[in-house]
Image (cartoon, rainbow, N blue to C red):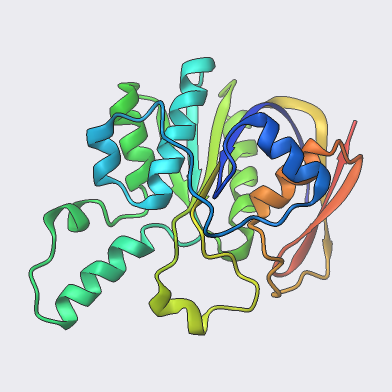
Length: 240
């Protein structure tokens, strides 16, 4: 596979990281993300909506709203490896203990909950979709972005995110898998400043960072070439 695109803007949130200066310092000095650091205060997302959303969806909608306010977006893609796992765990726990299921948990338990809330809050009937693809969720999302650009959409917003993974699942997670909430929003256009090709030889091992944040670290460091390891392929990036 071989594709190219332009990244024109980005915003990200993770424990202890929110503004551009913090992310640049994190990228340049290879700081680890502190999972117990507080998340920054939300500024774009209405409080009543934020109260209903899970930890990852709050950050995803917050970042998405910021990008929608800055750019003329005509298609949106949300990618999440685990989706609404927090909320689904609460539903399963309620059923297992014969407790009533929260109507809010039930209504917002689907994978496209975050992107749906984005379009509702923004009051923009923009084309939207949601995608999950395991470890390669971010990279497969970019393949979907390319498809949208080829279909004629001019500016595509992609938000990769996950919520905090419930402690119940931690003993069975792969070593080094991140379990904290984050969101990374990127606005793409057709172009050739970022080029990606695939090679065989991926790895199932976790790196400690989601693919999107690994990509962001290389991008902020102005690395001319870098590789993201997927499950079955290596995604080889270069900058024009």
